[in-house]
Length: 152
Length: 364
Image (cartoon, rainbow over all chains, first blue to last red; front, side, top):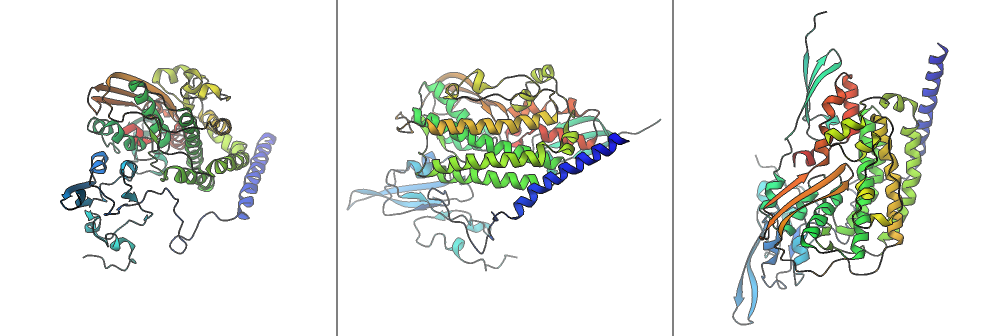
């Protein structure tokens, strides 16, 4: 009987000790942020969506060769006037991309890079499927406010 | 008395099965009579994928094996390929690898002990504290390699990038912070009498049984067998660092928890020593990237969960002929049935939490 009371007392004391830790945390600064209102700043190396500066690209096709999931389809033609290769097709499939960053690493002219865009969820499947990176307004559907009506 | 056995399907979507593990429990009242773990819900055929990818391309897939310790998986594959190709990473890269691997071990163990506490009924509080600390490590990784979970940081012959300016100070700050926090965890969990009573002598794994089943990592060390590849078969620079290998006594759930807690402190020690001895130089070796290796090799490294082995067979092509992964969680899960036979169903959850399995690695 006495032993049981002793054990209950010890258990109660260790609970109080644990509660002391939780009380200490009440007065600490919060580590969470109210996400849609204040957004985190992405680090300099953050790997977001694949982006392209078309003028820099020499269509060497190294990015499409190293891509482990074949998310990049590239083809290039020789410009007869300037004698330089330029891409005529640069299609990026966000659905297949695994954001490994190998394409960014291998690009010899730094034409291809990964931007800081992290809000890449879409309402429609069509938005994920091939994106033409040679177009100027390629990621408009992702950066626009979420007012899109849901497809029935 | 006549009784009927009750079959309960625990999982695949059960919060305490750590992923998508499906346990078929045969119960007599509240006592577990038999248990059959069904695996395969997370199968992505990574070994077959490896046969269709070049060695460089396979690196992002190793992140997806044990997703709580991606850096350690990267490291295992890198060391395997370096041994097969007979190249050596520069000293700075090796030190950086040690720092990253140990930071990831801390993050993984924090997650393991906190989910174990949650399985025992310490609902959410320890888990949130551990996630708060893990967030600091994840942010360090984000600054170094640009991702928070699938790092793809290491390369064959080095690492992908040097650490940016100021990050080494962040790591030093984290070590000081984490040492204070570990004292708090001790107050909250380790020294809690109820927590001890709940996990002591539950799921006792004997040393012999652990060796017979091929159990490795903290689970084996908790059973009293001192076996750590970092000490016994040193790779990288581990033989130059001063650290202890914590060993348990009984091999019960509490020992498995305690060994992990002690290992966090040892890992912090290693990170501190590696940061102090970080040599100058290039983090990537200048090598020809068109690998066409021949021959076969098996290399094992110490993952947070045990021995992670990669067996690679090359036949002169840029992709492997065969790649076999020896996942530590697979062997660790194999003892579950014998451990929980005869225990209460709530203790079965305790044992499963203390084994700390990750399904991404088991199913591959």
